[in-house]
Length: 59
Image (tube, rainbow, N blue to C red):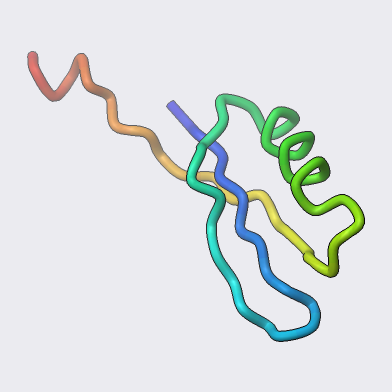
């Protein structure tokens, strides 16, 4: 299973961070990032991350 997270950085200072939530789809992450960064001097990229398969971990 793949999850998507948002990497955000400030275009002025260069500081960067990750949005705490992760998303089930790239589209959901993209919408959240655009809402979050609207009107601010921030850029973002969507990164894929592997989510743990909890069923396999307990099996």
